[in-house]
Length: 132
Image 1 (cartoon, rainbow, N blue to C red):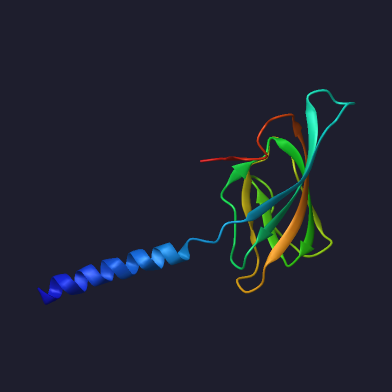
Image 2 (cartoon, helix red, strand yellow):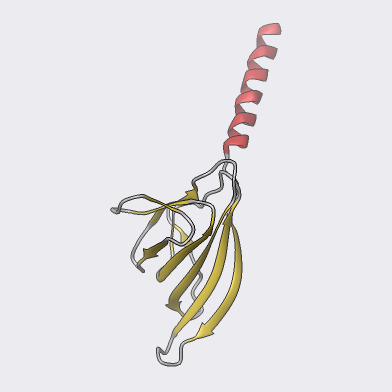
């Protein structure tokens, strides 16, 4: 019985450790959405994304032109087939409509990070969609 109890405790501990390893999610704040009269069917969207320490996003796609500007902290960005880069305040990153955003995370496990994103996309389409 002692052996079963020990095995059960090890499984529980492993499950708890796995749950604790799930990175914190990003917090997205919509700032503005504006229809672009010169480009029928298109809109500009402005958001901020905040990563808590150790935070990251799942692999996703924007189906938009995405322009990123780092405001605070340091972030790691990368798209499929491209080079992964670490960005600090004042630096920028671009994602095209066909890019798969494979890496998007806070570079720090102790400090938060925040960045501004301007997206040019089809009106009414979601800002992003997960890619599996």
